[in-house]
Length: 170
Image 1 (spheres, rainbow, N blue to C red):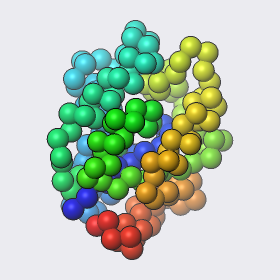
Image 2 (cartoon, rainbow, N blue to C red):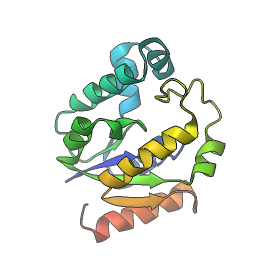
Image 3 (cartoon, helix red, strand yellow):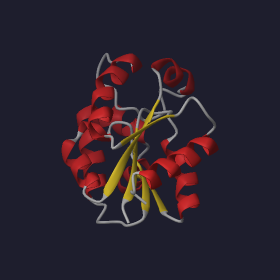
Image 4 (spheres, rainbow, N blue to C red):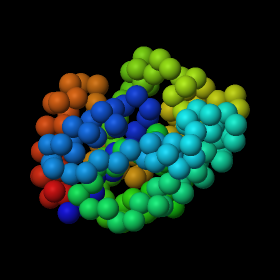
């Protein structure tokens, strides 16, 4: 059984949808942001503030590389996981990558706690800059793309399960 790896912008619902998806499939659930916080003993935004974007991305990559061949697991990644090719190759080895897509305006409305969210911003970067930078990576790694602003989380889970079954990933 393949793992299901969720990628997408902060606010797209990776953690929320991921928990419900795992429950509906009888899979385990892992949130890589929580792994980072546990390993470092720090909140994500503190890592970005204190160590910088590139160090955060390396910490995120290393946390993902510690996942040793889980099976039947839904893995919610941080929005910046796609910026480290080694991490994504590791996840793709035994998983199907699902891009939870949202238009920029929806992302900007959903993210209210931008300062404490733990988004990997570089100096002078805006949310729009991050969005524009990451979209090509999300599209590159995605096996399935699910637009998440057109239905409720529950309906999106149902739709995603159908897509995964249709493509014989589960």
